[in-house]
Length: 156
Image (cartoon, rainbow, N blue to C red):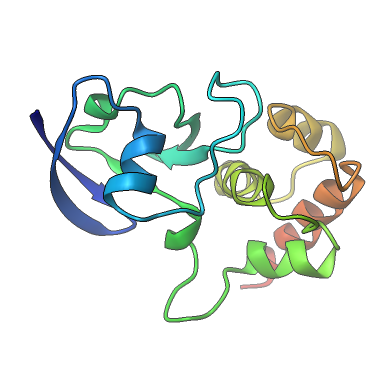
């Protein structure tokens, strides 16, 4: 076992982990943050996407030890005081939430994009979300949701 300390969703945590643990496993097993989904466990589907220092990463292939002293945000960390984040609201409005399995990862990738580009174009949105596999929405709703979110965030 080894010690791991990092910031998760604005809170500092200290854990004991196995050297071979992935970030996805630690989030789900040790911290009960089950919004991070485990799909392919090979870094291909995007279901496990979280923000590491503000950048989207596939937590299923990130060794947990790599987050020592860093900041991680999961889908549970987006809403504040029981209120949905505007990006989460936009995904609901656009009908971009179907079964919900890929949704947390897609929302976090959208957040990272909108933190860098207030009003991204369609091609930029497609590029940024290209690492996510979804069998329900057909992807058009994701693009619509990011556009709606950009408008919501831009008004603030």
